[in-house]
Amino acid sequence: MAARPVSRMLQRVLRSSVRSCSSGAPVTQHRPGERSRTAAEELSRRRQFLREHAVPFSAFLTDSFGRQHSYLRISLTEKCNLRCQYCMPEEGVPLTPKADLLTTEEILTLARLFVKEGVDKIRLTGGEPLIRPDVVDIVAQLHRLEGLRTIGITTNGINLARLLPQLQKAGLSAINISLDTLVPAKFEFIVRRKGFHKVMEGIHKAIELGYSPVKVNCVVMRGLNEDELLNFVALTKGLPLDVRFIEYMPFDGNKWNFKKMVSYKEMLDTLQQQWPELEKLPEEESSTAKAFKIPGFRGQVSFITSMSEHFCGTCNRLRITADGNLKVCLFGSSEVSLRDHLRAGASEEELLRIIGAAVGRKKRQHAELPLMLQDSPPAIPSISSQHPFHVQGIRHRVSFSNRMSTWWKGCWVSRTPPLGQRWSNSPQRHCSSHLDSDANPKCLSAVSGAPATPSGPLPTSDQLTHVDTEGQAAMVDVGGKPDTERVAVASAVVLLGPVAFKLVQENQLKKGDALVVAQLAGVQAAKLTSQLIPLCHHVALSHVQVRLELDGARHAVGIRASCRAWGPTGVEMEALTAAAVAALTLYDMCKAVSRDIVLGEIKLLSKTGGQRGDFHRT
Image 1 (cartoon, rainbow, N blue to C red):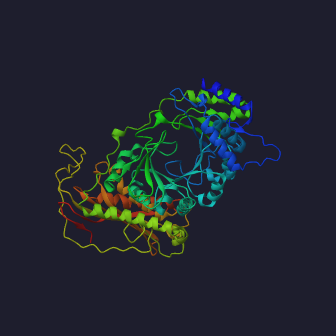
Image 2 (cartoon, rainbow, N blue to C red):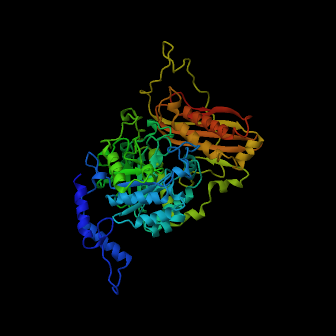
Image 3 (cartoon, rainbow, N blue to C red):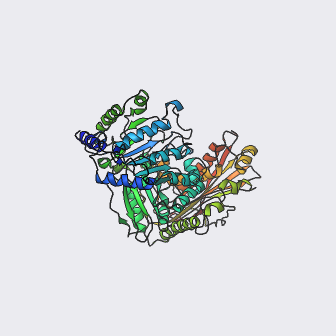
């Protein structure tokens, strides 16, 4: 606690000769007739003084382990205009009454106090901070605080392009934009709202205004977007981005499951297989990110390892919630209400004692989370680089990323109509998840497939292969089977009825685009089959395609799912699961309109590969 008397003594000495600002930097009183300095000159002079007369760091912001907390995150609102699946439930969360939230003046009062004690970086968060009407004014007021070097904001990007010019002028110096997919249809599925092209426009605007790097936060979730890692990294080749891959973390309402988490080491291994030259960058003090760069690329990639390799030992962060509670640890449950003390008329000294006591109670590391990394599912084994499907998959990903980069440079956002607009006037809608070098992974205007060729009867077994000699359920041992190419196609039909069919056809369901959601659900289901069907083997799928086609004559949706893999076991269960779950998802999307929906005709159409020969339904 010796730091405070030294700091105060220095300030008293400074006050004895000149008027001082809150940081101790002198502000000279100008004599009559003397030309006053410009604001920029005055600010530069004060910063120089601060560098030359640095005082010991505040004891109130130093915990019992010597960690100095110079970084403050302030939540401006609990509200958000998205409903990201890993962040909150679809119905949202109960909101605090407005009267219990911090006012603008209370936010600025607390910010001044923390900056006065040594905080030099403030990040504005939410909810979604850019939906707060006075966010530009708050940034401008913070920019006037002596000693504050960085004002950042974390945003979902929906309102960024519109507000960023004003925010930059007000003093915003750093931007983090959340984006978990480069596929528009998947974006809508993850956040349960439209807006992909607005986010892209915001990233483009940040680059245009000179922010470098523009940080893009991507929460990686197994079975949802881990297949896009290479797409994101490829964007850093020509753009000044810092793509930050974040391990999926538990929060209230996101139904967290460790099986969904992709660890830092697994992600790094995926990147190094494609770019062996990937090099580690020096870590900054108190940084939460492990940064890497590919030689010759403009941008870089980082990993936020909150789950697998926590960074508690160098944590310098404090958080103030929208209702004025101080949190010294993101994972901690304890909070102290600064709002209540502030409204009760507490002095600066009293507030500092309360803050200091909370910081002093901060633990060495956050509480153990419900995660056993050694029990997490193994990384999907990569296919040998000599295999054509491995090479083809990489080429597709990079090709898509290159197109994304080209579209940005050419202001592509304004030329790409939203998915709903492309479909709303279409009398016949089709949806496909297939991705190739000439088509986007979105819903297409037509689908086609070559007719199956019969190949004779399929040899059958006279025994149930998933039952042992004692009649107990058992998984088949495929260890001795040779690896071959396995392909399977399955189908299903959903009879919607005229009312639901018309709403789906015109994309007018209140829940959103039923075809897109069903398509993505089918793809997810194929990848998770071994977790849904107990005795299925885990299969490293090299390709999944789910197509949906409207049948106006029957007021139905036809579903066709195909899966491909290279391995010792077939993929018919993956194809059947994809078709079935896509059908169930359509039912869920439409059940509010009609209960008279029939799911049927779920069947295997064909399968190839394996010792028992091929099968084609005639």
